[in-house]
Image (cartoon, rainbow, N blue to C red; front, side, top):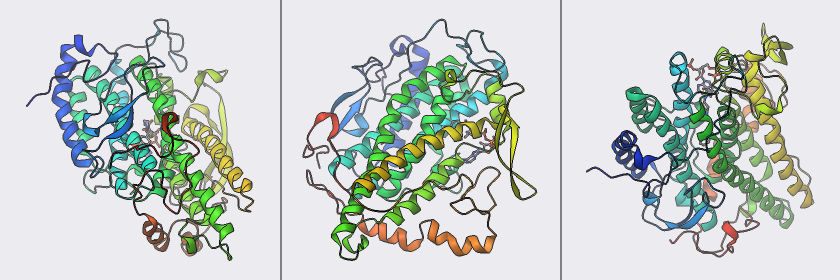
Length: 470
Ligand code: BYC
């Protein structure tokens, strides 16, 4: 049965109603998307009314329309930031020349690879989070989970729009493959490492939205600089939604931390676990895990792929306009590298160091969030400092993979690593304990024992609002 897709069903600013070729392509893909959503999207909540935000236009008052909606009826729209007809390449070898409205033949494969890699993360995260609705700590959190999920679905639509519109038959095939890979599947895994890791409880979900979604912010910002204008414009609009996802993560961990402090003070022995809370050392371990997995998402420290993507104008830096120099020929980046098994600080040609440049910006942003968590701890009168581990700790991609480093960046032998890793990363007992806390709380305004209430409700609504009609 074919579905008719029009401007009413798919809010958009890409003239879908007037573009028969795009309509036909999306009409063929959309039923597969819905099948995938029903099979791999949130388990058990598809027929419930959820208080969700839907983007209906790119205007300030149009991208945040709130109402109850059943998730399969969500209007996954296609939005690009309005075109600037005077936009030119802002970096790389083509600097100053008009940006491309069509895919340049010589960069077709690299561009498709970037779009597919970006697109693949979106359904992957929905798959990773699909069972969390069974154990939500409150209706507020349950609704936030589904908001994140439907928006990742929309981000998938955004990449599929680009594949269908600009890449012909192979684009259509890639769009199908995006629905065929499965997070964590040994035969058909998702493309990037972190997107195959289980997000099996809410502490991991909050760490994921804090750290992994923040990689999304930096990658999308780098793609928002692209000389392929439709990609740049698409990513700019996606970034408006990404902010909420990181808010869910940062405020989620902040509420866990606050509750840990409260319970610590309430227990005669300061034992948080005795009162069914998540103790701060355990929070630190999950941070170690998700932060290091997310650092891997920036790719190798020294990368010719990154150099080529910059030179050709496909992928820039975070906020390219803040830099003075945009060609990067002859400049260098001072960074740690591994030489003959030892760490040395060295100048690397800038274009080859661009993954590390982006990762460095990301690390600064993560630190700002961790500082806010530490302020909460201090305000509670508790002595504990949460820290980001070294960028070499527990890495599986790039030059530090296969090496052993402590969270403070000390190089270790394998035996020392094996003896210590259970103290640095979540072990089986931690995972079992955290899972034992995960019991659903579906009563209005009630919270699970291990998390403090949010500072305020969604869209100015009170805490006892029925965010999900259970
Ligand atoms: N896992 O030169 P290299 C988001 C591969 S998150 C597995 O070191 P390059 C979101 C790499 O593909 C943002 N493989 O790195 C968040 C290459 O393979 P091939 C997602 C990896 O290419 C939460 C080889 O290693 N967006 O939006 O410069 C929820 C050597 O590559 C990994 C993007 O990533 C890894 N971690 O950079 C929902 C933007 N890292 O080609 C959504 C698009 C590297 O030799 N992607 N490899 O087979 C890119 O810009 C680049 O592909 C990467 C890698 C930054 C990922």
